[in-house]
Image (cartoon, rainbow, N blue to C red; front, top):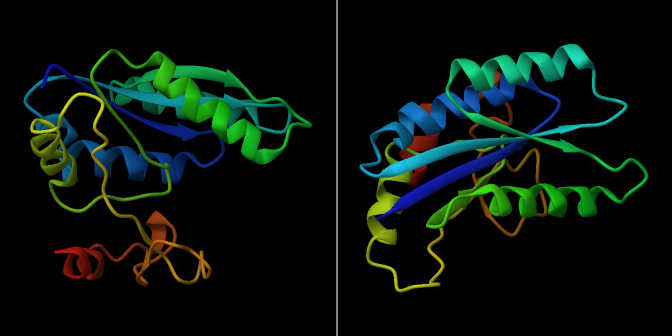
Length: 167
């Protein structure tokens, strides 16, 4: 594999963001992927975000060696339009190679990104490699994803229950 870009989107919850970053880098294995790689954080800002929150997120990017990409959210635009702008910005800022995107409210199983990259090495050009998402039934009762109750925020995430379910 020539290059791997991982990115997530954040703007409001530094606690959740830091838990996600730690999970991606250390638990899911981003730092152990044996190729050139980059971790991007699409940091969205708007008039309602507190500057102190944005500054804390930017300090976390520096602390964990992430490249922050600033996105000024268009107030008055539909939420989904802003989300797609954020997703597209991540793909536009990624270097050529494999790109993986996940929400900053998502956690990965142990070595999940390592396994994803190992599988991507066998992919044909332009082939999509993906993984399943497990959602909290409390948080997303009508989700199309797998449901398992392991918590809905890093403060109450039950890693053992999650690993037992996906393992």
